Length: 123
Image (cartoon, rainbow, N blue to C red):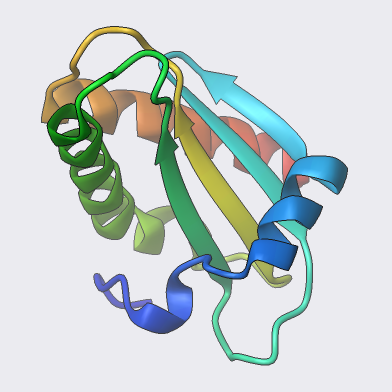
C-alpha cells in the first residue's frame, strides 16, 4: 500500500456515509472516534475514508479545515502500516471529538491507538 490518499480512497458517497452511521460500529481513542463498516466497493481499494470535525466545537472553518488536514495527513502516513493485512474492504469515518486544537503529534499518537483498537476488534 502506498503513502497516498487518492481520490478513489476518499469516502464521498452520501448513501454510503448514511449507511456507515446507521449500520457501522465504532472505536474510540480520545480525541478521535472511528466509525467503520465492512462493505464491498467496485474499486480495488481496501478502505475508503472520510474525516469530520464538529462545527459545534470549532466555530471557524479555518480551525475545522486545519484539523481535517492533520487527520488526513496522519491517516495517509499510517494506513500502510495498519491496513496492509486487511483482506476485506471497509468504509471508515474518522471523527475528531475533542474541544481543543490538537498538534500533529497528539493526533498521530491517538490515531495509532485508534487503529490498534480497530485491528483488535476486527480480528
